[in-house]
Length: 106
Image (cartoon, rainbow, N blue to C red; front, side, top):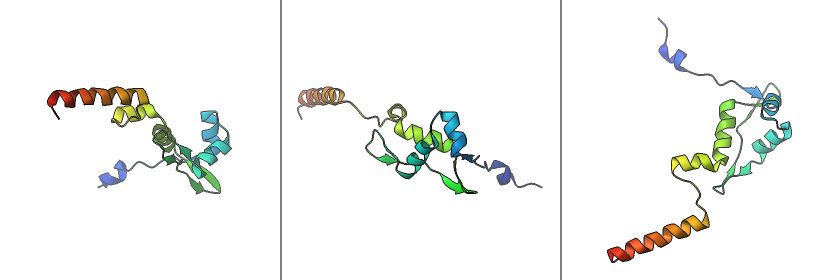
């Protein structure tokens, strides 16, 4: 009888930075910089690409690349409801809120 949890486990497919760089049309140094220094996202936070040393080479996974890019992409935040609003949009929302509060007598 086999253990169902063994089949439910998905092993990540580690890929060297050199392969990922070719596929993404980037230089290997770009991926290394994303891993070591990171990039400031639209939320003001510094995001780093997850990677490990495996057999003397830096590797990551397609899922980690996608997760890293999603954190940097403001469009993906809009779907979760935490999008960064422009100053004009914030101003309009504040004006509308003031009108509503005045209407309610607050």
